[in-house]
Length: 144
Image (cartoon, rainbow, N blue to C red; front, side, top):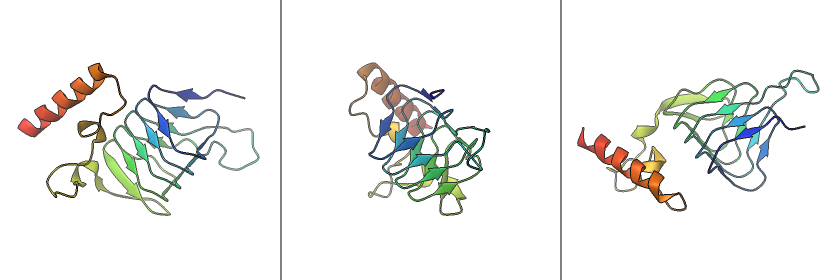
C-alpha cells in the first residue's frame, strides 16, 4: 500500500478517505465525509487516484473520481460527484457535477469582499512568512 502524496498544510475533516496513488497539493482543504476514489471499476488492477492542486477546497460529502484533476484554487461544492477535470479557479457543484463559474464570483456576506481565493481572507494557523505574501497578493489584486 502507499504511493500517496500529500503536500504541506493540508486540512481534512473527519472520515476523509484518500485512495492510494492520489496526489494532494499544499494548502488544500478537504471537508468531512469526502472520498478520493482510485479504482474506476472495482476490483481492478488499474489504480489511479485523483490530483488535487494547491489551494483547492473540497466540500463535505464529495466524491472525486479516479484520474480527475482539481485545479489550483478550485472549489468543489459540498455533495459534488466530480468525474471530470476541474480547471483552476473554477467552481463545481452537483451530482453529476457541473461547472458554474469562477471562484472569484463568490462574495462574503457584505456583498463586496471576495470569499475566494480563501488565502486572501483567511490566514489563521499558517506560517507568518506565507500569510504576509498572501496579504500582499490580495492587496495587489485589489489595486488592479
